[in-house]
Image (spheres, rainbow, N blue to C red):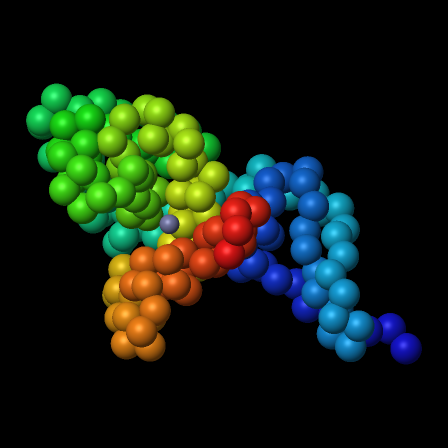
Length: 174
Ligand SMILES: [Zn+2]
């Protein structure tokens, strides 16, 4: 009997699929995951991008606020892999103050400098994929996940579900 298949349209890896790439299918019953080639029309791809960016927009707006502050305080911006990256100025100050090298806020990534952004890009891009799934709920859900980890006596950052998911997504140790 053929296993029933569902397409994981919002799976992290499927979301990153581009026209001409591959698409993940999870087959119920065998629990096996296989890939099949898919072809996207230009219209499909444009709609797909529009939905992703619109769904993530509430979180991206927070990132753009941080980006505006960065640009007003001597920072700079660059676009990499579909996200706007801000560095220097306010972003550097916040990173030093809060102890992070880079942080993702929707389709915006802020970092202390270009080196931090380069080193952290895969991990931060995994967070971008998360925001594309969670939309406006991302920031509250992230904070709740930190609170839950802390409540269980674990590290509020390292044991946060979103951090563990991002580490797994880019092949870092869990
Ligand atoms: Zn992270």
